[in-house]
Image (cartoon, protein in one colour):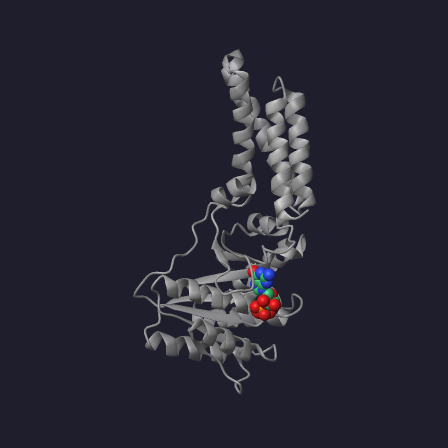
Length: 301
Ligand code: GDP
């Protein structure tokens, strides 16, 4: 089920409460069954879904019990709706504040992720985002694995009017990353984005490379770029990168497509890491800031 359908289905389930004459355990169970089915069909991890069900039930029961018969039917509905809303927010909110770049300081942001996830595109989008907000921004292409990676960076950075660094001859990504970051620090750049190699699958060489580049450039923030359309695989992929690159933020790309999105939600819980942006298209301005509460509000329409 794609994300828009998930929103519609959750919304329909919550609205069905308004038609129920009384809110009792049977009604709550039926509602939770529908909410959970919708989340599972969107690829949200089964354990997270069952936790959500339990937490909502416990919260609602506790409120009903403490207020006894005093609670009017309309208020009972509100209690249920709020409990579900809060737990949906909790799914995409690990409660961790992501790093915020500071002006007048060389903020190094390292992007990691598998090939095709949208890493290179996202690096340029990020540079454009920060440049618009007054940060002197640039990109270092430390992807020596994929033929044409530097050309892609060069083209998109030129289009975006963002400074870039890379090499056609140097084959050591760690050396390129270190040189590029040192050069841009000297030139007083404020947001230095390091684009790293990807591979088609999780491989030990890739993770070793991430560790080495991390040591060389000492990023202030490492971002995992995750494709929304990879479904359940997002959880294992994010765990594997967490162990080597210890990212502090996630950017989910291709949210404009037919992505289910639930896998990315599971990655947040699996790694206790916040999503900071959503990629919503191929253009350089297709990057939306992510915040848990507005995201769930919008999802529910
Ligand atoms: P990389 O291998 O991870 O560096 O991936 P690229 O940046 O080369 O992107 C792979 C493909 O995904 C390209 O065709 C991009 O235009 C596309 N892409 C990246 N982000 C998005 C997005 O948010 N939405 C859509 N629709 N396409 C995207």
